[in-house]
Image (tube, rainbow, N blue to C red; front, side, top):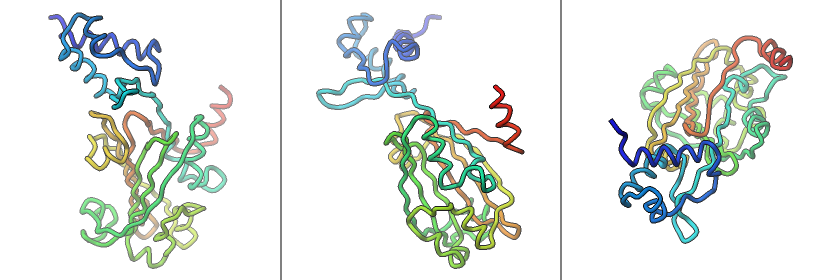
Length: 260
């Protein structure tokens, strides 16, 4: 059975994007031009370009200088284990910035702090009653000015009373993990969950997600020897990120990479 005409058109335009015939920032032909090229109706063209929009390959830009533009396909690698390594490797506050710079991009981030009641799922992870108050440190991370990920880290209020710096709306130079260790709350154990899902309306807005783009939720719970002390929920734009882990001795892996 033959594919619908709009699928055939979308396949042809997609191939041009993938093979570089159409570069990031290039404008697709106008709808009348595409109608003439493929001898189809306007509705067929809109169905075809709609597929490419949902795939994040192109975007519709309003205005005289707008139109259908090819999106930049920038995928950032996030090494999920580096920020938790012992001192001497990657300081937590520098880990993400260092990774972005090493990949030839410009990082930036915005911090804020708020007090909220813990959702039931996060309260369970922290071993406290649901609706318990917690401090939420939010970090919006951007790459080349475009939002890339959104991180909310939840700390129980009784812990914040002992470590009041957690309530600061500014970045903590040594990072919260090391700050807590200095105050007697080391985190020798971590539990990670990776969950792919469709975004909430807030995530669509804050991450400027194109239609149909999924997100990857990276949920990390940090445990001290006596209790869980924090839950970090990082939401990655699915089309701009990949997550990588190194487990065990990183020097063994690094030596192999250097040998290559």
